Amino acid sequence: MKNFILVFLLSLGFYGCFDFGELKIIASLPASLEEISGIEKIPQSNLIWAVSDSHNEASLYGFNPKTKDIEKVFNLKTTKNTDWEDLAADENGRIFIGDFGNNSNKRKDLAIYTIDSFLDDQVPVSVEKTTYTYEDQSEFPPKKRKRNFDVEAFIYHQNNFYLFTRNRSSHFNGTVKLYKVPAVPGKRSATLISTYQTCDSRSICQITAATINFETGTVALLGKENVWLLTDYEGDDFFSGTIEKLSLGHHSQKESICFKNNETLYIADEQNGVEGGNLYEFTINK
Image (cartoon, rainbow, N blue to C red; front, side, top):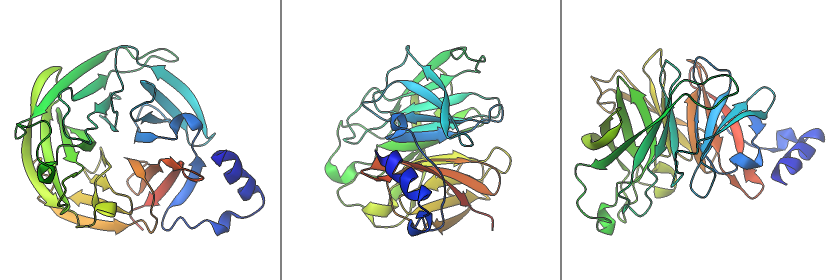
């Protein structure tokens, strides 16, 4: 229904009535992605790969931003969508699914799936599973003021996964924890690298997605109203360099981000009634 209303209004010339701030709307997403939780692009494909979070199919969708259609669907039958919250990728075309949504901070089955290269119109070549625990978590769940073990954002970099927490603590102060997990199958430990405070408003300062530019190394973190760009960092401490906060001028349940190119980000938000459920572009180098 939301898609029909949006198309109807646009057909009547009401596009200018929608205020998307600094975002440029590209498409209204189909119903199968109304709870979109992660997007990613790989050099080998023109599609935007996407997943939805818990209570949805364990499927990977290939969305074409030009035709505005889902062109491929891979049902990953050997996996389970407990709470898929983000996608990552590498330069070789591998895609990684983060099954680490952990709102109550009590999960002990956190996992990341590695989806190997694709064959045309067939299922992925292979799926591997990495499970992990946080080195500094001993209670499941911890006390409410210490609940900072939910993750909805991660990237792949130099044979490791890097996870950014969505702070669920009762006394919210914007602290994001950065963890490192070896990108190999089996049981692993998530090592705490560093922390950073975004801002102190729970409604806009939680991190809901992340991505890295293969060419420049720029890391982008997403919130409901802002993007944080991390550059000039030392080693793999992404919080050690320059951190630039960019306002989107728009508030919604934004859950997904990836680079289109060096100047532009793709951003997607979940559908909430007739609002959201869209794919946008955001220019970072104007």
